[in-house]
Image 1: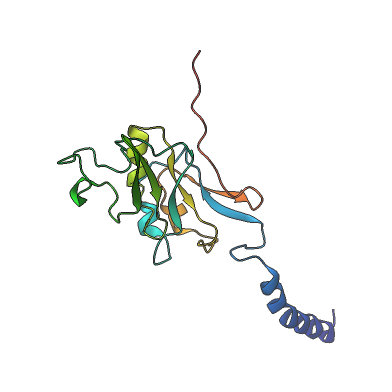
Image 2: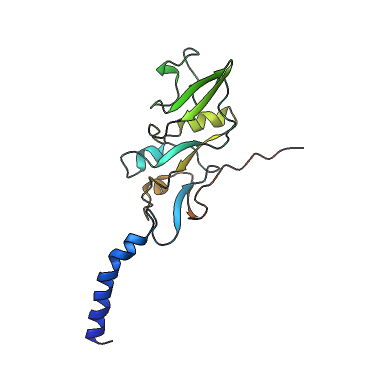
Length: 181
């Protein structure tokens, strides 16, 4: 390769690099894979809230089942050792009040997650798993995640629940429990 060829290749690289960045999807690193949490491995350790490089974590709590959230008592919403059975702050599990409880009819309530308030701490998920149908789980929101090659949360995760998933299947859901016959 001559010096002229080398300069020509360098010049082409400088010219085409900005266009390649323009046409790449946001968060995609060229490999077509994204970070995601395997809900069957997650232990709700709280690292998703504290280790993310973003000011507010890209990890959010979501519902897996549309039928969830019509109970009078939701263990993802209320603390285990609550003082009273009311909606006072000291009785709530979520530290940011991200779970919205709406009256449906006696004795039913609907519970929804306000993702703007959710910090990805996993406290509600842990409560939902202890007594409930396990509908709540943590998920990385692709529109928020920077898709870092060395994800700080993935490195800190004690359960190795962070995995790379293909862009065409970006979300992992909890496996349904096995039915014993």
